[in-house]
Image 1 (tube, helix red, strand yellow):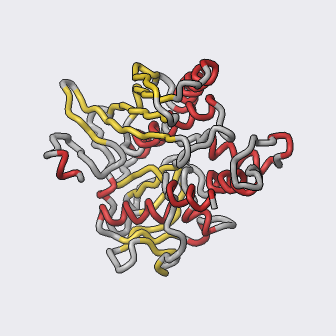
Image 2 (spheres, rainbow, N blue to C red; image 1 turned 30 degrees about the vertical axis):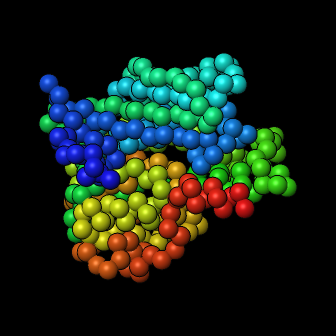
Image 3 (spheres, rainbow, N blue to C red; image 1 turned 60 degrees about the vertical axis):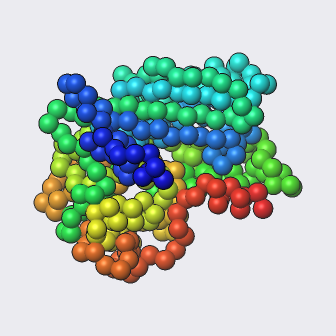
Length: 311
């Protein structure tokens, strides 16, 4: 498919979390992500504010994963004709609130509106790289590097399971969340799913600290770790002790949007990152856990999980 689009003239083209484009006086980092009603969110579970927040957060995370600072969002909405104005206002509030909380100084600077049978939110995020700081790619990890993570593992997946297990009717259709009935643990998991808080500010921090590779963990640690391993031609060996009480969820649960990074062995990890493994010479398995090839769940696939949820 990428070959059909023609040759890339970007400094960093397709294959990383974002593209890096040369412009007069600097470099622009650009990425786009789309949230579609059905596979990506359900209105019975998601307020306009939650949707706006998440649409901003997932894009800001991709900019941060390149070691860049977000600067602007462009938002395109396709909405059914019966969409209420109050919902659109809430969505705009969510976008603004996420920018203010996660990437101060970033704002929605434009976009487009149109009508469709399916509610869709497409966000383009733009960012800049500090002078003298190269983008952090997926392909820079080297044997001996420390594997580190900023953010949570499996919490958003736990929130998704709360929704699927507790807030569907007898026909499997979603129903409104009874928030008063939620435990503190379940409420935290739902917040991670509906309003993720990626460590956006730590992207540039990691770049300045010498990160050799980095990416946003959106599809699960095992799957995204295998992508980093493939790009760098290495094996990522994860420490079982770093995976918490539910290793399967930590490895396969998606949508946490933490930052997975590798650092030289002697580098001091920046505050907010914790060591979770080591980069090894390339082996048959892209990801191992305690030296054993990972063969568990393949990671987060919204289409697969959505279909199974309907069943």
